[in-house]
Length: 72
Image (tube, rainbow, N blue to C red; front, top):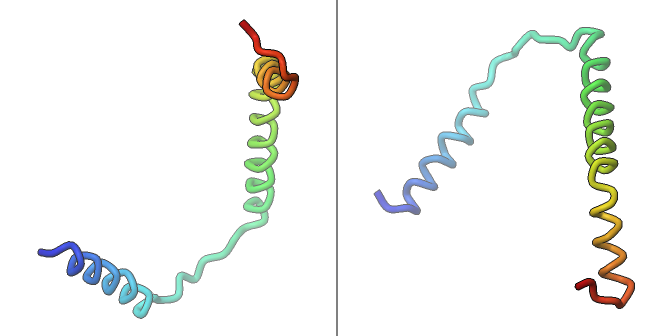
């Protein structure tokens, strides 16, 4: 098969799968919002820890970049 035909076939199958969607009868329980908040806060805390661990390298990078002096 040609590449163009494969792309059209995949696009038509993907689009067609949305035409026959049934109701899921699902709900988000009260703990879902709490879990999403914990994931978000955990990600922020992880970025903060990584930033703290590499702060000296980040600081040196920007100081050497903007100070005008070259480090040997």
